[in-house]
Image (tube, rainbow, N blue to C red):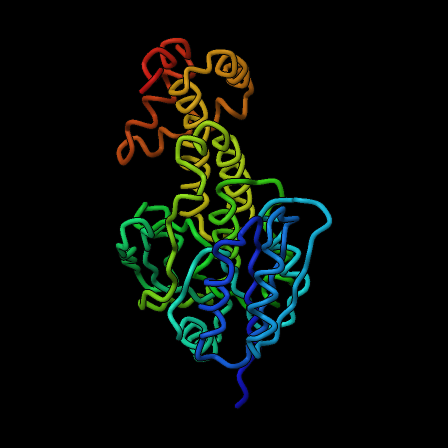
Length: 328
C-alpha cells in the first residue's frame, strides 16, 4: 500500500534566521511522500532565498509561494491550503521543530482509524535556556472531546500538532479567519472538532514549539490583540451553537462560553484602564440579546458562581465593575 501524500504548509514572514532549521526538521522526516509548501507573506528580509536554498538541495517535493500583499498568518495558511494536493495537511510554524517520526506516526494513525483529524502531544523548547517542557494532555475517549472542553478539562490552543484530512476541510469550507491575529488556531481547531467525531490522538510528544526572543511579547498581545481574541471567541461560539448536535455543548456555549466572553471584554478593558472604550462597551449592555446572554449564566451558577456575579454587577452597576477590575 503506497503512502498517501502529506502537504506541510509553512507560512512565513521575515523568518530568514530560523526557516532553514525548521525546513531541515521537515526534510529529515522518516516519511517519504511529502509536499512542502512555503508561503512567504511579503517578507522584507532574505527568507525566500534561505528557504529556497535548503529546499532545492533537499530532494523533497516543494512549492514556494509568494503573496502579493501581506495578509498575516491566516491568509498565508489559506493560500497554502488552496495550493495543497495531499490527502492530509499539516500547518507548521516557520520557527518550530518536530521529531523525525512526526508525520509517519500521525499519518499511520489517520490511516488505521480512518480519521479526519489526528493530533499528538507536544513540548515547548525555551531556546535561551535550552530547556524542554512537556505539554500534558489528559484525554477522555474521542467521542467526548468537546464535552471535556465544556468541563474545562482540556483546551485546544494550537494547530501545529494536528493533521487534517484535506477533503474534510475543503468539503466543509473550513479556512482560517483572515485578519485575525490571535485566537485563530483555537477557532479553526474547535470548528473542525465540531464537524466530525472521527478524531484520533497520539500521546507521543512529536511537535516542538520553540520559544525565542523574536516572538511578540505577552504585554504587546494583551494591549494590541485582545480584541482579536474576543472576536474569535464570538465567532467560535456562534459556529458551535449552530453546528453541534449535542444539547450539552450548545447549553455550555450559550449559557457559559458566550456570557464569559462578554465579561472578558469588560474585564480586560478595565484592567488596561481604557475608560473611553469601556464607556463604549457599556452601551452594548442595552441590547436585549447581550442582556439575555449575561443573565443566562445563572444556569451555571452552582458550577461557576463567579461568572453570574460578574454578569449581575456589569448589568446593574457597570461603573462599579470598572472600579473593581481597574488595573488588576
